[in-house]
Amino acid sequence: MARSYDIAVIPGDGTGPEVVAEGIKVLEAVAAVEDIRFDFTHFDFGGERYLRTGEILPETASEELRKYHAIYLGAIGHPDVKPGILEKGILLRLRFELDQYINLRPVKLYPNVETPLKDKGPGHIDYVVVRENSGGVYTGAGGITMKGTPHEVAVQEMIYNRFQVERCLRYAFAFTRKRNKRKTLALVGKTNVLTYVFDLWERVFHEIGENEFPDIKREYYHVDATCMWMVKNPEWFDVLVTENMFGDIITDLGAITQGGMGIAAGGNINPGGVSMFEPIGGSAPKYTGMNIINPLAAIASAQMMMETLGEDRAAARIEGGIVKALQNDIKSLAAGMMGMGTTQVGDRVAEYASA
Image (cartoon, rainbow, N blue to C red; front, side):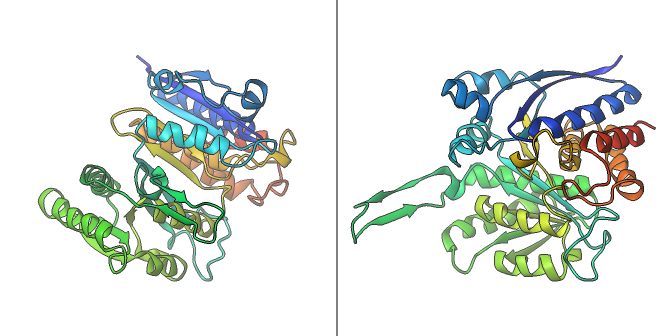
């Protein structure tokens, strides 16, 4: 009997619907050979809906999305909507309300993809960043007093409780064990300056490691040193775990080393609930409807969705399809430079993945 998954689809803005369509194409091709069935339900959340109705996200949206096995997101960002409105009103709101407390970002260089790092290849760049996704400065604690005066004060606070730290670290240790490569988890922080927050992180890191995951090697890196080593020695890394803001910064640095946003995928994970998967590159509205945008990041996020749902064979098929398309067909990751259109890339990956 086919395994069945209900997937909520938010195509979003700009080229989001185009890349999501290719991801769904690949998922359906793999489903046909892996005895899987998908039921996709589309939601029109995004800039066009907001401009038409004035509503960013319905009050019932999170409750409705909890009914699905996963959420597949294209991109949020509309040129006619002020930056921040949709991002905070849709992306951040869903992350917080659905308690997607892990942001998972693989940093992997595929064959025939150019990296700006000299003398580095696929064997050097293959690690994962686990970013805490629900706390820190992004929660908005703080404020402004005496605004507009010479004495104006702005405060934004980095706040973590032990519960948030424990569950993030426990997920990271378990992920490192399942990944089963170097079995090394490194905490990325700033213990010499952010002494209160990272005292908590470091103590819990070692407590959980010693008591629950003695098979996992533990390391600690300052975040500034991590940025340097991501450029000079990315082969040192297996899994990195860090707080929200640091994770946001280092994952974008990692993305450019793996070939740019056109290949970078991410997951907002709630291990006990519904998770959301998305390409990292944004909506690229200037390319809308031209059939030239690179869909590989969206396809890779579909692969992450399959892994998270426990469909490892389907995920391996999708990754294999991406690799073969890069080796055989795709000339460049840049929009309009791939040597084929968006839909053709999806066709190639689907063909290879289902073979």
